[in-house]
Length: 95
Image 1 (cartoon, one colour):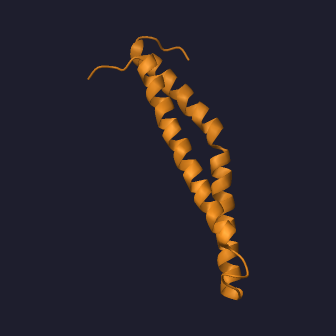
Image 2: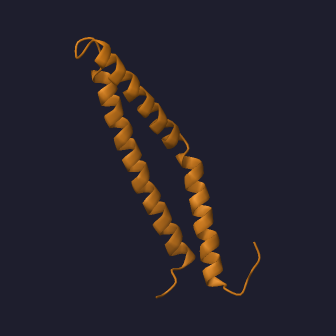
Image 3: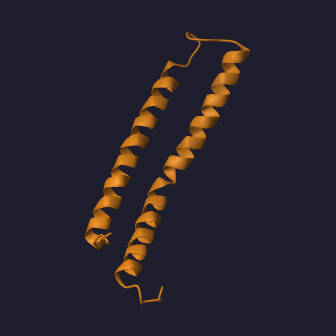
């Protein structure tokens, strides 16, 4: 199986990252729609309060995860580049 070039690998990584960014934006938009619909006109009472608290907690956890994405994206790109360099130069053992 041929080893992809660094340019090809970089392109594939960035394309994958753009797909993730699109998915994150879609999820954030959906969460916002749910948030916008929550209120006294839709559902009230203890069960509604528990559901809203649970939803808010999950939404906040997702938001923290999504906010960590840019740093993780760069880490993954750097790792892919390092792995590719090792494939391109298998005798090199430097860091």
